[in-house]
Length: 514
Image 1 (cartoon, rainbow, N blue to C red):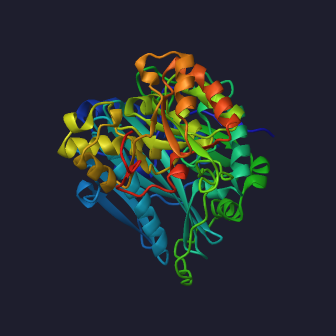
Image 2 (image 1 turned 30 degrees about the vertical axis):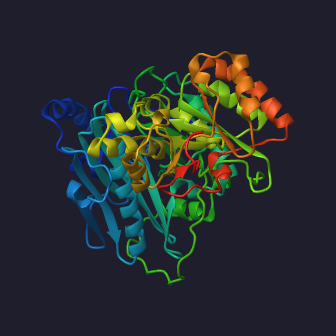
């Protein structure tokens, strides 16, 4: 039996769970938007009745409303006052369940909801509303599972997103969806399976599918025990030049039959599968024994940037950094870097990151370092102050986390133009400021050969080189730059490797621009 691709009705994009739970927790949308949804929501009831609970595209739902054993926390915008950027007028209506005996799961879900609110605030263009509802999708065999459903509206329209989170009652660990899988190799295999499922779908950007945590953040099991992998509205949509990918065709689903999925599952995943199929859910659990603080496991799909074999305390390191992307040219550069086994650092702007999220995910998945280059490519001290400065600094970090799960730690102001206020905001949002020690001057309309000579001729150990992956001459120069620097004994490193882990709120290089 092979994996199957299941698509909801072309005319109807139903809320999760066949219209249960989250429909009662919709935000108060503007009248025009609400009117447009009336017919589709009515049609969802018909579809649910026709398909029944055995619909293979649906993750099982054991409970979707609070009761005696499962209570609910609800919040609005006033409950998230600690975020650095809080745009006015954004309506927030969020909820998550609380289970008896599973206080650490409540804390874990609270942290996930808080991050979703923070990132929607930061990443969205003119945000209007965010609603988060919940469903219990597993309860038994030492596992609880919750599916969070986001309904969000901003300048670019209305869309839904999904995430499943899993609680091990024995350890008190709240797990991401990828922890249902045995390891990174299992996630890579699953990614290959899903690529095959969608291979002939014209409305899916198969090249944008990469084994990263945030792409595979919603997985569960249907009533047959098959693995259901679902993707947010627009997450896999093809590139629309100059515009974020459209939310069409809505929720995309790949169903992996149980016999194909079982070899990929971790112990938690196997128990989660059984817990999704129980006839009598176990909703109240015993609190786990206190084991003291410990490091949570690294979830499959969390990628460490840089070559682990490079040690800049010993090696002759140089960091190639690329600004202003991702662009149409970036995949060609990534092909070269993969072929040459070179890691680099990329500093992204807001509109390109929104327009090419699949390239962003690929850059992260292949071990390159991701930093922010501000939302808009403007001189920050001149153009932004106060709340606007806060929003500019917050934007790309939120975009990257929504696409990959990675928290950005590096920020490069456009043109290298900073100020004490800009540096202070960068530090307040948990990042270090990264400038450069060597300018290739590829932005001055120089040709390929001039770029090569500039980079190679000025190279020195510990250099951070400024380049732009948006420029064709730079891409043409890159192969010879790599060949010649490698011939001189240089090891290619990320910025963080060169600087030995930049400290939050500090600016690098310490002496400023050369």
